[in-house]
Image (cartoon, rainbow, N blue to C red; front, side, top):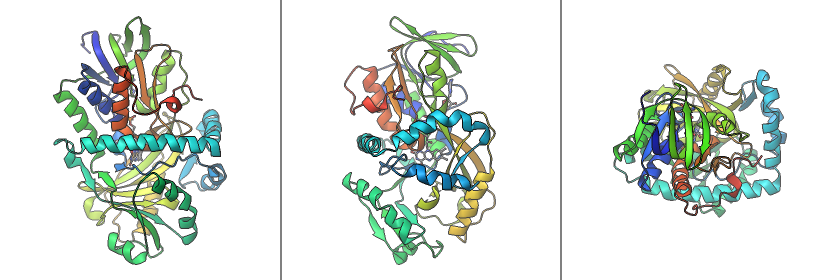
Length: 416
Ligand SMILES: Cc1cc2nc3c(=O)[nH]c(=O)nc-3n(C[C@H](O)[C@H](O)[C@H](O)COP(=O)(O)OP(=O)(O)OC[C@H]3O[C@@H](n4cnc5c(N)ncnc54)[C@H](O)[C@@H]3O)c2cc1C
C-alpha cells in the first residue's frame, strides 16, 4: 500500500460504524481516511436483517434470562448455541452477561439504550432526506409475532418499557395479522404492530452508499490491515500489515468484532466477543413479504429487502476462527417454512456474520486511556445498523472535544 504517512483523522474499519464515523467526522470539519482490510461492508454490516430497530431498548441480559438459557442450549439448533471448542474461552464474558442481567444493572442499561435510541432516531431522521441514502430506507412497519397467549403475556413488561419510551404500536388479533401479512400459519393469533417500523432494504449497499457519500465529501478509502496502535505525543501511530505506518491526530477503531486486538496492542483489555448470526437470502418470488416479521419466541426475523427476502437471526458463540455451521441457517429456514407455509425455500444464499458484542449488550464508545487520540466505537451487537448514525455523531463530538450528546459513562471500554 502506498499512502502518505500523516493524516488528520483515520477510521479503521469500513463497516456501518466506521462509515458513519467517517461521514460525521468529515461534516465536523476533519480530513478523513478510512482504512479497510477487505472492502467497505465486508463484515456484519453486509448481511444483517436491515431493521432500524429503534424500539429495541430492552437489553437482552434481563432478569431471568440466565434461567432460559439452558433450555435454549439443549436444542442443538435452537436460538442459542455454544460451540464446545469455544466454551472455555467464553466463561468471563458469560459471567459478566449474568451480572448484567441483575435488576439494577438491567434498569441502568435500559436507560442507556433509551438515550442512545433517542439519538439514533434523531440522526436517522436527518439521514433519511439525503438523496443518496433515502432510497435505501423503507417504512414497512414491524409485526412482532408470538406463538401463544402465554408468551405474548410474558412480553408485556418489554412492551410497557417501549411505550414509556414513547414508541407507538398496537396489539393485533388474527384478522388484522392476516391483513398485515397474508399467509402466516394459523397459530399466530397474537402480535404487536408498529406502523413506524423502518427497513434498510439493502444493508451492504447502504453501508457502501454511506462510505461513498463520505468519499464524495472528501474522505479517502484505503485498503490495508491495521495490526497495532502506538500512542504519540499529539496523536497516534497505526502499524499496517504491509510494514508501513500512518500517523494521525485522531484514530477511530471501528473494526467490529475484531476491534479488541487493536485495543490490546495499546495494552487495553476489552471483554468483546462475537455473537455469530446466520441467515438465508432468498429471491423476492419466494414469498410476498409485506413487512418485517419478528418471530419473538424463536429469535429470528424475516425481512423484505429491495429485491430479496432475508430469513435470519439466532446466536452462536464460536469466536472468530471456527468455520460456520450452516445447519443453523437450515434450522431457521425450516422454522420459516413452518410459519409461512407457502414460502419457497429454494435458491437461497447462506451467510454468517460476526456481531461484535459486549456482555451487557451495550456498545463501547470511548476514548483510549493509553492513547487519548484513539477513540473506540464498536460492540454494537444486534443493533449496530440502528445505532450507527448516533455513534457517528458521538465520535465526532469526542474527536472535537465537545460534550457528547449522551452520557458515555456506561459505554466505557474497560467497564468489565
Ligand atoms: C444475522 C445478523 C442480523 C443482524 N440484524 C441487524 C438488524 O436488523 N439491525 C441492526 O441494527 N443490526 C443488526 N445486526 C447487527 C449489525 O449488523 C452489527 O452490529 C453491525 O454491522 C456492526 O458494524 P461494525 O461496523 O461495527 O462491524 P463490521 O460490519 O463487522 O465491520 C468491521 C469492518 O472492519 C474491518 N476490519 C476488521 N479488522 C480490521 C483491521 N485490523 N484493519 C482494517 N480493517 C479491519 C472488517 O473487514 C469489516 O469491514 C445483525 C447482525 C447479524 C450477524
